[in-house]
Amino acid sequence: MNPELEALLALQADDNAVMELERRGRELDGRLTVLDRERQAMLEAIERSRQALADEEKRQRELAGKVQDHKHLQERNVAALDAVRKPREAAAAMSQIELTRKVLAQEESDLHGLSSRLQDMRQGLQLQEMELGEADERQRAARDEVAAARAELDRELEQARGKRAESAARVPRATLTRYERIRGRRKSDAVFALRGAACGNCNTAIPLQRRNIIAGGRSIDVCEGCGVLLYAAS
Ligand SMILES: [Zn+2]
Image (tube, rainbow, N blue to C red; front, side):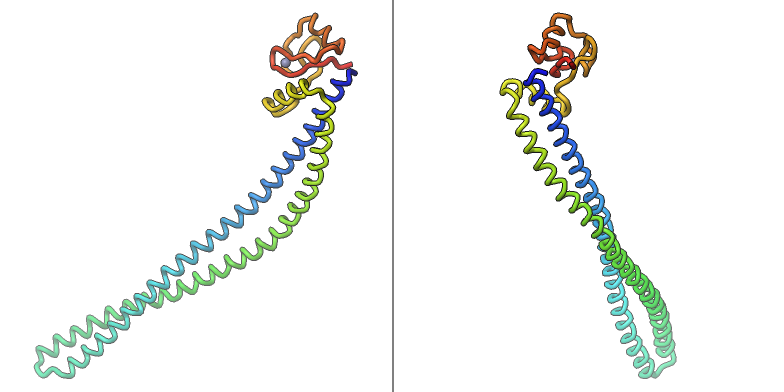
């Protein structure tokens, strides 16, 4: 085999090895993204629960304030009833007391309902926080695994890139430039063997005369159909 072609095929193999390692790197990134999203979703759910809890606690404070106000009002109503002398005034004062009593009863019942809802919400929040803790524990193992794979992959990549650089140095400059341009465009193999009388990539028939030149190993030719470099497999 022509040494230029041999160097080119070695380079292509090295490039494919680097590409495969980079693909595995993206796969590891993807696994981390899944873990991050899972955790983020849990954090957001906890934040929503905290906000809902804070809103209800605010309502509870407001309602407790109203109950206090109406209790004071009721004390004044009772004092007013004690002070009246005329029956008509007594009837008015009593109906005021009855009205306030009803309002207070409703508010106290609302407050009671709110308290038990708040208790449920706090328990729910606690559960979510426990689940986050468990998920973190689970994720730690998965993240350790990804980190170990990443470290190993980085070592392999460094080696593969070094090997690739050595191979590239053995390819003549002009051929290397052509190869890299084609590879950059296709993001995959740039050099193909003839398959019978046709390009091994796109199957375009190659005229006999050019085929003979390729087969003679005198030149690494370009396919007019798809633009890859062609060689004759021996
Ligand atoms: Zn082709």
